[in-house]
Length: 267
Length: 267
Image (tube, rainbow over all chains, first blue to last red; front, top):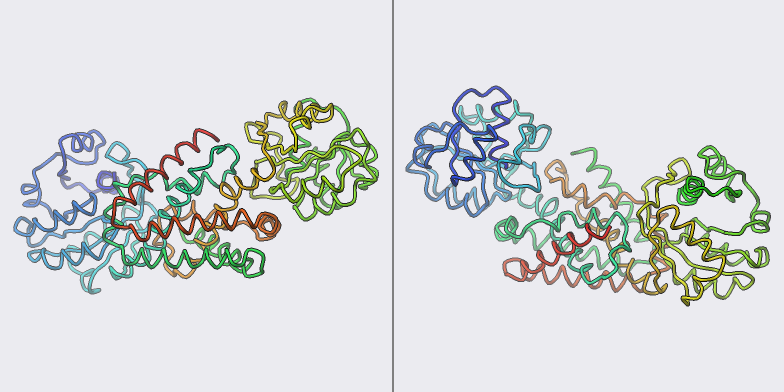
């Protein structure tokens, strides 16, 4: 979905080069039908031609690809990725990709549906796209400038972050919300009369419908930050439990409402 | 909002009796503008005429009204309410309202906006309306049958529950989601770069925008059940924290996804 949306977005923004898709036969057929790629290619053939290599799959598969592509890339190519956690990928790429530049990325535009059939040329419009260079100079190479130019043309808002800072922030803004939703749904799961609930529960359990398959790699590659985020959340809930009848709780409501308002202005 | 919506819904369903509004001058003006009431009246005058007394305000004000109205009601009247917790209200009404019937109620149809200007004749259509009689026979009096007839005509789905069971269920399906959202927003509040977040965080912090004024009474009148719900939630989160890299977490995702699916079929 992300890879095919990037192809569609590039086309819509005026890119007239060739876009090759490397995936299963079914996935590339779907991407061709969607107009997201021109043709499928084996990995080695695609890497021999590509100016930009965009790794968009699960974190486990991105790590696997990073381990194998160095002998196959062009020296003037840029390899980037769309993985939801960055430290493990960036650390591995630093060791493994030596013949060309690697620049970690995370387009923060999700959908519940997977696959090219759900691709959308406007997916990245106005949405954050994090880049995680080790040094600012990595953003100023010819290949990185060209890539950033296309990100701008597809409407993405580029945010530059240190990989570890990225992983810390998303542990709070993405991974903790997922686990909070899953835990809530698992606890409410024992209730028989679910018709006795407000619309808030529907909002609060939307993320809980997410598949573990998508989350296993995220949790495994960011467990340190996620453990700390969960610990903070548990501590906040304990504090609220001990202060249900005191004005302390009012302060937490005010803090929460302030964040809710700030978030709606930021995204 | 709830009181005025009930007035509008009754009118739309064909009720042709008089609807009196007891509130501040500003609130009754707004309710008249909305077409939800015919005229304002002082409490004593309204109670002297009313077949059905519908107490729709904060729990604290409902409790206050329940303490004072017994000398003023007609013996054939039914007093009911829209309070979000039931034990305290039902217990007090059992002691204080002796000259006519009281039947606790909780229409589970919310909106973020307060006041008659936000009232909606279709608010209760297809939504759960809990009734909490002490004995099933309380539903079969003439006054209760007439009330239930109107609930049916406005499209509400009546669910009969013991008051304590109601309070236990909503501690999990309504009060816990609120506190989970507030706590999450309070923890995420320290993050500077909020543009680095997914759409899930917006969903998960929608409830956090709720005002403490609406929640103070709910938390104070259901603290026992809420403490237990929070304890269960904290325990689940601890379990997930200890099992971030194990298959236990997959089970929690599956439990959560099952509830998310079941909820979407139930509401």
